Length: 306
View: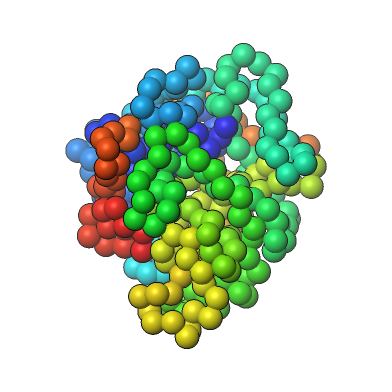
C-alpha cells in the first residue's frame, strides 16, 4: 500500500512516508531537520517494504535527489508546518489499483501486475470534509507501545479523528501557544491506540465517501504513546498525554501542489508528476534501537516519543 515507505539512514529505519507520484514522497519535515550532502548520501527510500528483516518481493530502493521542507516549519513544540517532500533518484514502479473501504476493512483491488503494495495515495480535495469520529488508519514500523521495542513487520492501527476544538484544547494543556495550529488529532481519549516513535512521516489515511482513500495527515508528534488525555490539566505535566498529532494535509495542500508544479516546470524533468486521481534502515538486534539522525537532542530523542 501507499504507506509502505521506509526512510533509512545507513540501513536503519527512522521515519515513514507516503507515495504521491512516481518520483515524490510525502513525509514530515522533522525527519530532515539536518539537510546536508553527507546526511542525504546515507539516506535510502525503501518502497514496498513489509518485513524489515528480509528483502520483500516488491521492494524498491532509491536515494534522495531533492528535499523540500516547508519554509514555515517550526520544530519547537508544538511543531507546526511539519511537512516535507522528497524527490527520489529514479521512478517507482507503480501498480494501478484502487483502495476501497468496505465493512470497516481496507481492500485493495489489483488491476496490474506491478505489485499490490506499490501505489500512490490520493491527496484530499480542497472542498473535502472528514468529520470528527471518522475512522482512519495510520501505519508504520514505530514502537507498538511507549518505550517498547520496534516491530520488524509493518503495523497499522485504526484511529478516529478528534473534534478540532477538543484537539486544540488538549494541546494547550501540554504547551500553551498563540501560534496557529497546522495539525489535526486522532485517537481515543482513554488512550491505548496511537502512533509512536518511528512512525513519524507516515500517512494518516481516511476513507472518502466514494470508498477511496486520501492522505489526511502526516504523523508528526504526540505526548507519550497511547496515553490517556482525559482531565489532562489535573495531572502533573510529566503524566499528561495526547492523541496522535498529525500535520493537516488539506491545510497545506496549496504548498504541496505548488512545489510539485515548480518541479514539473524544471526543464531537466523527463516526465511530469502524475498525482493519484479519482472521479470528480532495517531494524536489527534484540533491542530494536531506533535513532533519528536529524534530531539527536531535540523533541524526538533516541528511543523516545515526546
